[in-house]
Length: 358
Image 1 (cartoon, rainbow, N blue to C red):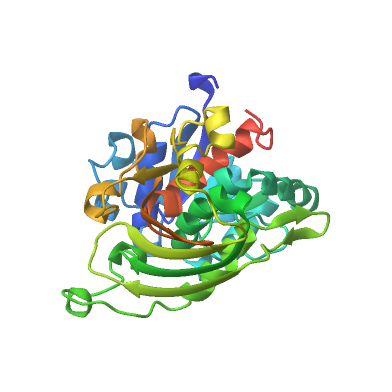
Image 2: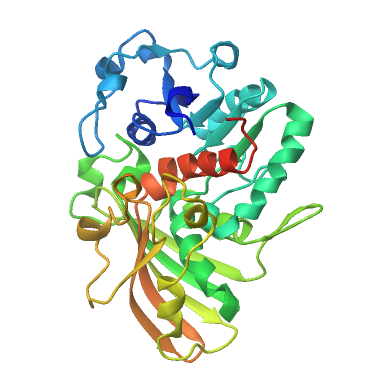
């Protein structure tokens, strides 16, 4: 890519936590130019520094501070010269806006759940299902533009950890998640409700994990995506942690791994983003910690290298094998790998695959 001809992008819902992660990742991106920010009506006309209570690590990018918040209008974006829209909109608002942008010829990379289960919309985790990007050509033929969704934040970590285990044959997955409060948004949970507490219910979360992980690991055929044949059983709780969803998983495999074989499958795992050298791809998508008390959100949530890929690696630890059953803990950064970071990686893959003109 020519750094002087970067592709203009917009962030929709730029003031929330995921929107802020988009701004952080795009402010110095080598291929994409952060050109336009949208937010709710109460922020329209304000400078980004006035509208956003910055809550992600590091300082608010200087580039973004003086940018004016504009209305989230499909017509305005289509006329602005923006070619890629990164959506951090709530699902209810996202459905119509994202469809309008697609009809206007834009490429939409969405963290919202509005279109995840549409037949022609891939739920993309590039290391796990890069071939699903083929669905985009159907959308372009029908609409002019396209939508690519990333999965629910918990499902993203689970699917990425399950992908290296596919050669063993996955039969059943049982998973319990301990999810950070940032997964509920900047002001999604009061301190009174979560301080020194665990809440063993997150609305619709278990259903999303079970449904979306099977779509991600499903098979693309002529009719669409056939979900993966194994069952996923999830239980999800909110815990008083700022960033990082910790999962405890037990996977029934089709064959018993030899000693250290499962660990080697995680350690050696690489896929399309690493082969293509995508800017936001971690060198190692799955990192295995040998310590008996890792991974931990406080210590491992920013795993991944190089620097711009911090938070993009899933960390696995406490591997235990009993016959055909493999148990482990895994940690995923919910607003980076589980949200904005994967959407940016999806856009990088689409560009390299020729779905967006450079």
